[in-house]
Amino acid sequence: MAITQQENETNEGFVRSFVKEIKNIKARKITEIGFQEKIKARIVFLAADEERHGDLPREVANTFLTSRNDYPETILEVLKMLNNNQRPVNTYN
Image 1 (cartoon, helix red, strand yellow):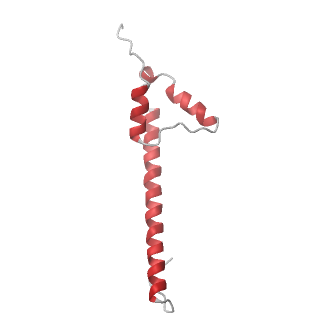
Image 2 (tube, rainbow, N blue to C red):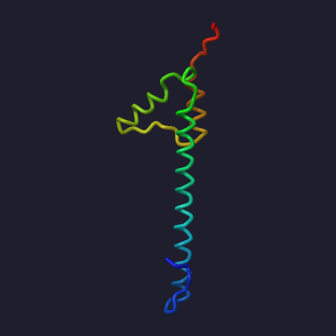
Image 3 (cartoon, rainbow, N blue to C red):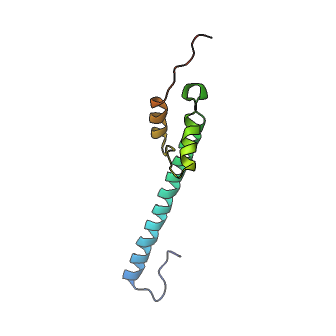
């Protein structure tokens, strides 16, 4: 949609259409930002130290296969999940 007033469009109709288009643009941008955050969270989660967190990523992936999505959707959720699932690191090398 062009965001210019059409020749036969009333002022009220133009303003209404303009505001609607701006809301659509904002909604798309918010959706894109949310999607980017989910991707970042997934990458960080999957890159976590395997020795410290063991099978956690695989366990979450398995729940995803059963139509349950336990993947963290934000970086904060990743941090909470990793902090709550630490395993002792072997210090007797």
